[in-house]
Length: 338
Image 1 (cartoon, helix red, strand yellow):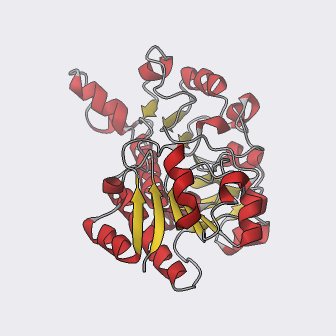
Image 2 (tube, one colour; image 1 turned 180 degrees about the horizontal axis):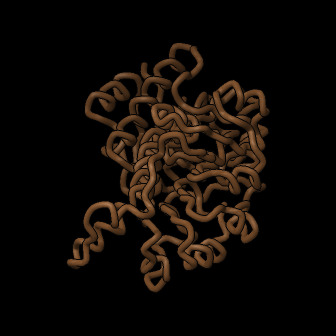
């Protein structure tokens, strides 16, 4: 007799994250109780919990609900964050695996972050806009602010999943890399071929700065007015992680001066204000929170979920998804995906 699985993936859908092959694998392992049109009703969740071995999705699981889920062995978030809607302490006490699939987006975000850096280093967005209105500039005169990535000093703020994926992509460019990550010991950063730096030193000396740290209770507006002011003229600032890490008012004021460039994929409120001056600045590349959300990343989520669930059914530990760490999850502060 198959184990039961609660599949409650909103805002994802089964069709989005599961290829036909992975769906077939999942259904061969479990009797799937699914809800694919918005949030699963509370009544359905509570009726199902006593019999399920795993929950896939962002279902609210406070202690009261977990207490009735006596067969539960795994909770898998497929949105990409460890949200504050689960009693993690209870899960650790009971040996319930709490996993998330955020790592599936790391390669996609790293690739587009590099693409943003290359685009701004070669002034591609501005020259494209000039060409479209008949004001293009030919040859060397169009390259007065352009430069090669090769040999430049790069700063990475946050050496998590995205930062590590970015390291691999930057290696062929022969850049020197400074890292600011207060959650990592300096020797670990050195072991990865980078130089541990203070945030101030990184901002003052880097030609390209990648902000790819996750949002926590400790780093809200960590890039404030003073930090933005410390970025040296002619540098590029890439934001592809979380908007809450940046004082957007201060960032906009610095960008209005025109002495740095920026690529921004995430915003304090989305959709972003239609009347923002950011939309009119030539030194800014804008992207509508699309860095990670490509079809391959979503299908990778499904593949990893089924792989790890299959291991768990065999009494083995999961190996592909990211595991919750009790000390870390208490500090995380990402907003749920809408």
